[in-house]
Structure formats: C-alpha cells, structure tokens
Image 1 (cartoon, helix red, strand yellow):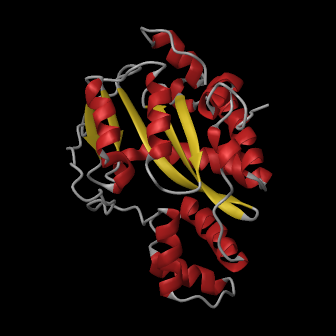
Image 2: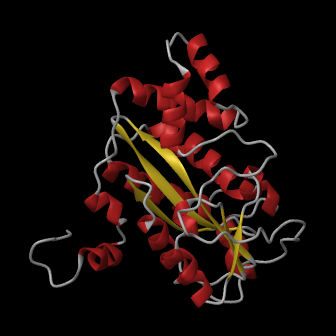
Length: 274
C-alpha cells in the first residue's frame, strides 16, 4: 500500500514498484454539472460514430434527443473535452505561446518496421460522476501501446510521464503528435531531441489515424461497457484492458496477430511489458 506520509521512497517510485498509475493515487475526477456530464457522454459517443461533426451538427443531434442546448454550451464542452470535427483541413490544435512547431514527417512514408514511428494522443474519458483525460503512446507498425497515463487536467505533466515511461522500453526514429500545447512544450520536445528522435507534428486532423482507432477500441470495448465510477476503478480497468489489447486481442491488419506478438518478434531490442 502506498504511504505518502512516512515512506522513504517517493510516491512516484512506490507507484512504479507496485505497478500503479499515479493518477489512481493522486487524482479526483474533474467534474461538471450532472447535465453537462450527460451531454459530454453523449457528445463523446456520437463523436466516435461521426468524427466529422462540428459543434453545429452536435447541437442539432442533441436537440433531436430532447436537450434544449445552445451552441455556446456545446462549443465550451467540446473544447473542454479536447475534440474537434475531423475532416481534411489544417489542424486547429494550438501550441503554447513561444512553443516551436515541427513539420509533419510521415506523409507518404511507408511504415515497415517496429520502432520506426511512435505516436501520442490525448482523449476524454467519461466517469459516472466526472471525467479524466487519457494519453497513450503507440507504435505505428505493431499497434503496441507502450505507455499510458491519466490526468484530471490538460497540463503537460502526464504526457511527459507517459513519454518517459515509453522511452524506458525502446526508442523510435520518429515521434508524432498533434500540435497541442502538451506536445509542443519545451520539456516534451527536449526529451525527444535529447534521445536523437525526430519530432513530427500533424498538419491535419487525419494525420494521427492510429491513435484515433485506438481510442475507438478503448471506449467501445472497455469504457462504455464498464461505466467506471472512480479514478481508481478506471485506472485498474484500463490496466487490464491495455494488457488484453496488447497480448490477447488479434488485429486484422496484423494478419490476426496481437500487437505484442508483432512487436516482440520484429523489435530488434527487448521491450518490457506494459
């Protein structure tokens, strides 16, 4: 059991040794009114079905369900959730002030081997009485989830934690993200550059398709089915799901091998299990 008062080891180190995500120890879920939480859950589910819906179509959808909502409320909730309509256009993800943008390096690049390209992305995760944000790092070739972290805010700390966790298991040639402030932050890009990893950033919302597919699987196969109440329940559930996803769930695109089978067979360096 983690002891924050008298232990000689830091809470971070205790959680690492116990295999716990620090979010399950530190965090309470972020919250909104009960109505807004209901709306956010409906927006999230509809967004997975129709990711091309902007706020106007989402307002129309919710009104058809009987919710008397206006555009101002739905725009705010979609911003809070970190989602936007996906269609071919310039990305509207916003880097932080003074943060450097990097070019997109993956257009027309064949993905041929493990540790060629890794990617990270953030998604909104609903709870019964709140919500969290989830970041994951995935290998594009094997679809293997190398690391993940939860947070109740969109500050960049949990993204950097996930990056460091992933880099403890291997190293890609290229690391791709969107242009959000969490990923353009100096601390995040400096960690990549110090390891001699090329930094790539999406030019369009469609450029990070593998993470979008991962989020669809996570939500339909775990989050929506289990309706987690607390952060600790969510953390435990995601830990079990990602273990299943990596080691048991076959992928058609991998000739029905699992991500772990593809990753470990093709990886030139040993990679620890998540």
